[in-house]
Amino acid sequence: MIVIDLPEDQEDLYCHCLEEWSDEMREAGDLKRAWFVRMKDRGLRVKVAMDEQGVIGGMIHYGPIENVPVQGIGLYYVYCIWVHGYRQGRGNFQGKGMGTALLAAAEEDARQRGAGGLVAWGLALPVFMRAAWFRRHGYVEVDRNGAMRLLWKRFHEDSAAPSWMKSDRKPKLVDGKVVVTSVVNGWCPAGNLVHERARRAAAAAGPNVLFHTVDAFERNVGLEWGTNGALFVDDKPVRTGPPPSYEKLRAMIARRARHPRHPKPVAPST
Image (tube, rainbow, N blue to C red; front, side):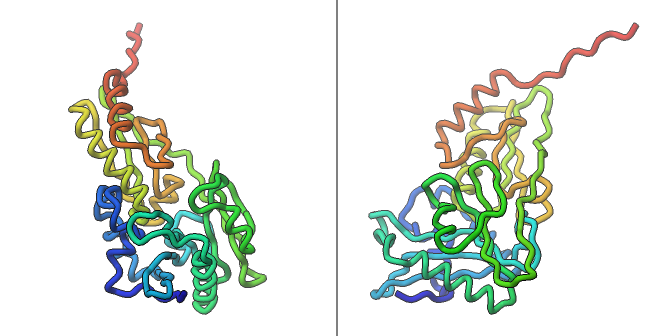
């Protein structure tokens, strides 16, 4: 097994998170490709792990923390680390040390680029991007946001710990309409899939439903919303992990569209 920088001829594979066989990846559209193009000049780093036959089975992408809505200075941030674990497509590569090798390569690369530490997000649940996995690799938890954990490995004594940037901002309501708001950054196909399904579901719900996209590519937008990926129906957040189906989103929006918000009657002046 070897870990190398992403070859140019494998960029499409990377943009599909090694799941080029997946219908859901195609449904997520081209948002990740657009994000990747925009991030190339902003310090984004991508490495892949290859087995003995030269088949890519894992990937990690990371970059300066100043590009994401997380408080931190002089650190690098892991967007995602992923080892393909399905029988479909290229097969199951998990349990062979690829994840460990990818993380170690990213740490060394970030050190050489002068980073004061490597930061990662993880989930308290035993699913994708498990916080416990990072802790086993020497990462320390420094902040929480629901089930999400923020962890880091310090490289220098004078490096300051990162923290989540929290915000209570919610979408604006429109009288007589249902507003579906998608905050989307583009880096994660799962979030892109939610965005595309919600957009289609809103369009199918009729004229009482408005769809609003918040492009959270720029850090200041993510800081303003406290996230770079979320979905709201009016001012109510929708649980998006794992991504809800198109049918579920359409039914949810249709129910709300039957009872759109109306302005409260104004008491007559005396």
